[in-house]
Image (cartoon, rainbow over all chains, first blue to last red; front, top):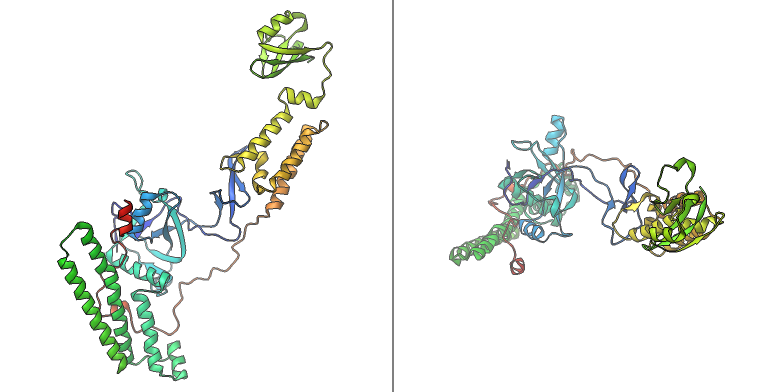
Length: 271
Length: 204
């Protein structure tokens, strides 16, 4: 589940540091100015200003997972300045076993569970506790690496799906969630009482409707695969100047598969 | 310590010439200490020698000691008034930047650029009042700190809310029948992690 960080900072890296706070604003946000007090440097509230760069805000020290995608990370790290990378805070897992299991089984789009495993004690990624860090806060040097671990490829894919579902209501998790609703709606077939029971989990959708909904989710999932793996392959081939034949053929196959899945789903819905 | 007069030196300082008292008799009679020239009247060299020794451009000497108004004297010898004026100006400028302020003047940062003028005016009014004392200046600074806090009106918000645990949350509708794993699709890679878009490569 966890692996050592790669040399480059990347999506799915888990960070920790004295400066990692899930900083956020409330209505008491106010600029701060430094002054020389009798006991040393101190800060006090100042009038709002577009120029002042120090702020009184809220935030708790947390581990955090990097959510910016790798292209954006490379760009931000190169350009620096006021540009920032997006992180989600990681809350500790409950210590009680039962509570921990419940937390880890969450299906909420706003949370992504990190089970305890070799290399990391686990936690819950909270997409509702996002914050941003400038490049100096994430820079890796020979002497200082603020990263604790990195999610492995499978976990990064799961994280991307959950992040995609939370931020944009898109991607496989959102497809499945909507497909489930489609199945229940079809099974209710206009019967308000049955729909109410289905919504409460007191009744199950019909297998035939589940199959219809599943085909819809599969077609959309195939499209998501092309958007991600398929088109990234094109980009990499372009970058490396590869012969386009294999990429073209792969893309054609993927699109044909998508078309077939979409046709099957449409046909099944029409039955 | 009797004051014999004031003098302006070549480097622009205005010094007070005083007669050294008995307790400090061991010090050099004509030494320069800060902006004060110390000497004993009975040991004073000729006026010409004294002026040359201290590169004095002009001097006003009176005997007995000059009756100089306290406010004017304070300004001349770098007393609290002059220091207060210098600090006020310096901190006002710094309040607009990220340079650290002096503790007594942090109230300046609380005001917007439009409103800070009234505060400066109050402060300068006191400094211009020849009867004002250093203690009154201190009182004004303390009052301004309080006024600045009221002006800013900053109050820290207490979290004060129940942090409802979501660990037990489950969507209504019971266990879902579909999942990503149940789909007949193999997901291997998402959109993240791809090479730079064209626009970035052009920039690079």
